[in-house]
Image (cartoon, rainbow over all chains, first blue to last red; front, top):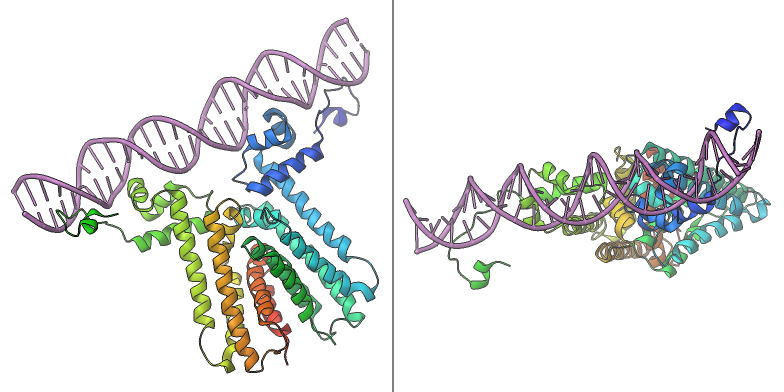
Length: 209
Length: 209
DNA sequence: TCGGTTGTGGAATGGATCGTCCATAACTTA
DNA sequence: TAAGTTATGGACGATCCATTCCACAACCGA
């Protein structure tokens, strides 16, 4: 990867990068998010980031690799948001955490006035069928979200906010489906008010003891 | 459009088309379904249908128009399936019809081993943001599905299978979200068994009187 | 200050793709 | 059978786009 590192010492030091990798990935994400994989040109990304093509390819490989990088980061962020909202905290507030998370997701979609949707959904729809990397990453993400939701549902059950007779695994899958579904129907044109109501309704129908 | 028709009589009769338009649209749909809009080449469609480019363009305009046609037909079919399953029938069986519909949608996704997903979701994800025609058509479709679901939920409420205190509009939106969500999580990699369970769970949590 | 290495960015390349064009085929009416 | 019209399908042109290439810049150790 880097001879200086590999050899353990440096003969000379190369010219350092003049750009912030993190920032470039952010701009690239904006582009892919806005226009999808096929719809985004490397020239667009070069323009948006201010980088020349040489730098772009030198730093990230090709278009596919760049997208994988952006997509992976996005998936990580999606799980992180869920972790922040869900993981940890007393059982007494588990139901509130679940409710907050579902409403947050609805709010995100509702406030997406540009109708860009979620890059996870968009990328999966466009590429999962033919790109094993994307398919694998999206599957991992779903599994991670499922686990977080299941844990939290179990906590809510312990505290008596959700019927203990219900299978937490199944309820988790249902909530995940609702969250991803809100994203889908939002992109399909349902109005923000309806999206918020869906989150409400979903939390409302969960079985109480 | 056609001088013979416009003039009301025919001087001569032109060479008739040698292809079945319906069949060509079906093949085109397969292509768009499999590889999306941007990922499908007109040459692919020409090859798949056996038509030359001249015939293709002569009959359907350009790639965009052809996709709109295919997409529109798909949306019509989606609503028709829902109508067959939902509309009409005694109130006593309304809940069963709803359940059957939701399970059917889950089964469709579960059995989609090629992971093609639904063209409605795929097309919407890829194009709705920049193509008003696609956005409008998908919104119409959602509205039509919502109406069908709401009507059926009301029927189930009349028969006492669903709590009358619940807002049928909201429950309809929830079920639509679940149906579209199943499609989304299925494409994201959740296994068929889980998808079927989600349909079960969703119907199970609906409020009973 | 100098040399060696990597970063930079824009021009060039090669391949792919959309849509058009046109010579020919097929068909019907007169 | 002849004439007029549209259908056919493959070749062609123009454009677009991912990637490579290269001359030059920047940096650091010596």
